[in-house]
Image (cartoon, rainbow, N blue to C red; front, side, top):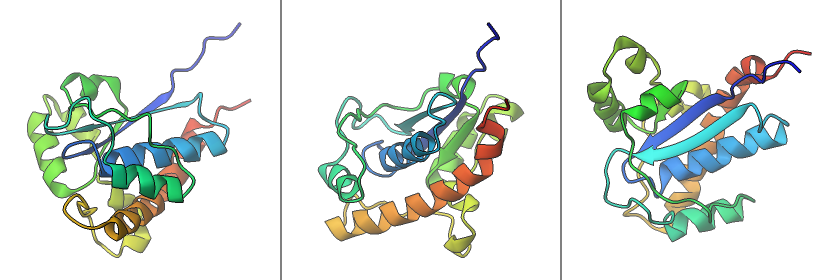
Length: 168
């Protein structure tokens, strides 16, 4: 029996891991599942801060995901750790403040090279690099943010899929 290839590991990172990064985790995992590649991709998320560790995703996040056919109810917030650099192939901050924090935590150039802003993958974002934080806004902002995350995650998935898809 041939050796099993380790899955490609992607981690999405926002501030508290209850709004944006859980959305990205659930959406990206959904793309992998629909493409039949869930065994070849491991997706996680975390926050730069520890305010919400162990909590569920914000109810507005779960509801926005539900309205688009995703299930975010299993999510529990966690904080990014230095070990996440070792565990992941790609670390995707949701805005430039997360990217700056993660860059400052990077222990090596290889750690820093794993960082790429989510919206940098989406040409339709028109040069916008930051997914806005919907936490202090109303439910409609969660839908808008989810739309941005879906578009950028789709672009990221399309870019990664040829490398993830096993060859026969």
